[in-house]
Length: 152
Image (cartoon, rainbow, N blue to C red; front, side, top):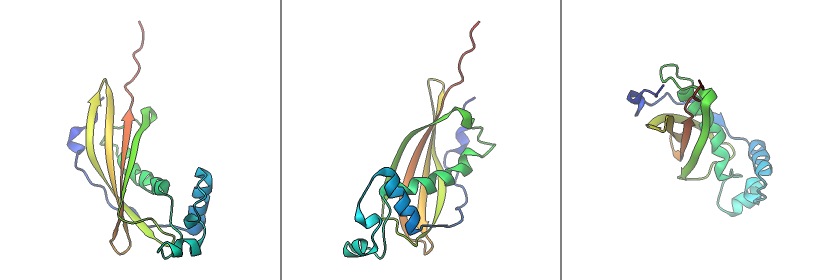
């Protein structure tokens, strides 16, 4: 069943703030194998002009994808999450995510398309810190695969 096109443009309430911790950044950097000292050493980050360690660019995915859960779990949208695969991800940064940031995400459905029986859902996540400063915009593309045809 196709997703409801009237949901395009729908914006969901901002999430509760997520506090970014040094240890979470360090764990993430280690998990992706990035040894950039700005991710683990406060002094190295300060030498680059940051007040504390910064997060790798893809760190914010964990925050924005969780926020996209508001969209995914909206029963009125009609998304069958058991059929969903992650299609694409991109980010546009105003500034890096830093240890100590308290970030909230506001998710908006940007597009719903149907192609070859698959539904494609584009979600934009606007990430702001607790002062309201824009930090990053994340775009997530989800593909809900068409149901398999049952043979005769």
